[in-house]
Image (cartoon, rainbow, N blue to C red; front, side):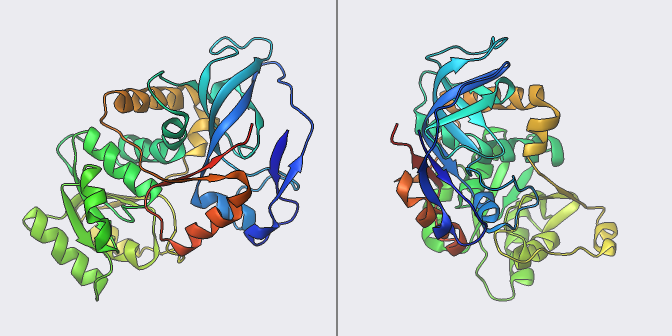
Length: 330
């Protein structure tokens, strides 16, 4: 089988396609033939060696994939050969074959394409857990999503709308306004404005009659995080999802006290490892939302396997709208 292999951390051009032995599943494992795999900002951090969880070298990157079950190991009961499945893994997805623990495989609805299913993995799981567990969002609340036109941002906008929230999409490129509105955002605010701290608070207050937002989902960090903190309402909750903007922000504790606000973080892979039943419940709900058209993943592009380095470079440029996928040749 062919797989993308990293033998030393560094720039994405170090990735190589190699021929590796075919795989076999062990007890409790599922062998998948990959059709498409997801690309995410954490993949860039893993390749460059900047992610907090790094597998031993050499390894195959990639955290999500959709494909067909080729074989199952002893004791597997939730899927069988021929099933179409989505899988979430810590690494290894960018290969023609992947062995996955049964608990990390989710049989797809027949109505979903492999591309849609792969896009409904990490980003939508992030949105679901950020809203339901970390933010404790209630129907009717107002949710500000920063970096709203990216893969994770669009997932957050869509899931918030599907759960009955009023979504405010924060974007830096005004040309993306139509995209985020089509994904369910009721309002759009400008994250490229001068004096972002003051500007974002003013924009949000104009939309909320001076109240602020109940929830912020922030995959950007940096100056955007600082500004979003000031846009929270009394008892508001901000969920830190990532730092695509580069700078990891710091919070002064007195800011939390003044408005009784909460800042919390999310590492979605912990749910996969610590409570796979909870994650299975979440994925089932996401699949149901997609089947009734409440969720419609936006695919930016599907790249061939040999353009993986190019795909990772786009996360550094932060110029991508929607989800980026890799197609496997097998």
